Length: 94
Image (cartoon, rainbow, N blue to C red; front, side):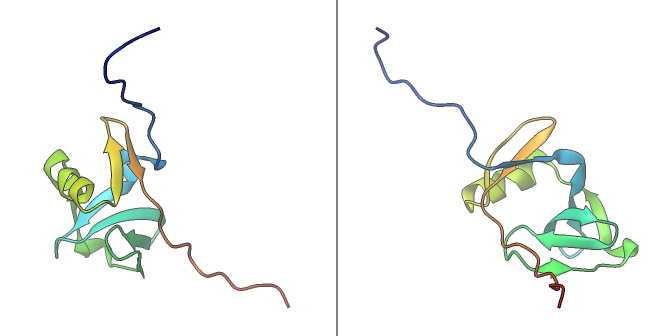
């Protein structure tokens, strides 16, 4: 049996490939779900920003702020484990 304080390193958030997470010029951190559709990581709102509104791929220091805000569980060089986000409303077939 192992002693000491064992800490589970298994991530609990949904893994998102880091290449899909960006910062907008206004400082909003977003996940790009599809061409032209992003989700604000703090508010959960879905947005359709113009391409000119994108600033840069998210950096570690920006992810650290999301960690402190509880929106991100953890991250590494390839993936960001995002905590629960609202789903996009979709039209149903009538």
